[in-house]
Length: 252
Image (cartoon, rainbow, N blue to C red):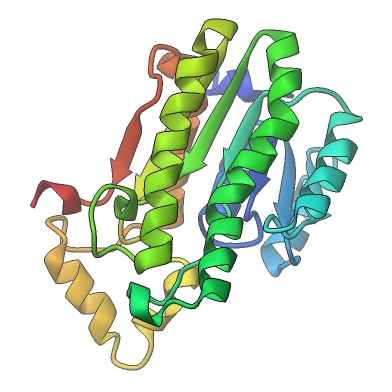
């Protein structure tokens, strides 16, 4: 029997599903026979592969999570098929490490709408049904940038710090009603979002690896593996935590 056989037929929503960590999370839950609703602002080769390989399990919706109307429309379609057991707020974008004086209001709003406000909006769409069923798991994507400086620019760092605070308060308010909310805090994960670090001679990627105690970047499936555990019954007493997946970056 699979270690995570409990996910069979459980309904899971994952944002940012077209690539990177979101795609790896989708793959992991699909392999454990979950019903996955994946949201992203565009499709991808991976999305098409999921649709072909798991036609009964995987459902894809085009959704720009920075837009309230898009979230509301997607949630309405998903909830018409029943309540959600697990919500993974994974979608996010970077801000090119821009300090505050190089951060325009437009960029600030774009980062916070995509990385932070989407978490609030999606949670508020799916939480009522979770409360009605007496259980639910919400895992929000923070970052080491939510715990220290240097992992992003002004807007990204602010958004990730806020996600951690929001998640702790969310769990505090609703744990008694059967809800568990936690954060993942990845460090250097090799995803399309970080592809610029691997350009040319990969000097930036090599520098980051040297600065990481584990001496390497992680792959998205390593974050997905942690997600499986954190979403499982084995983690039932884990509430409001921030789980770093950073190769030791924060221990320095």
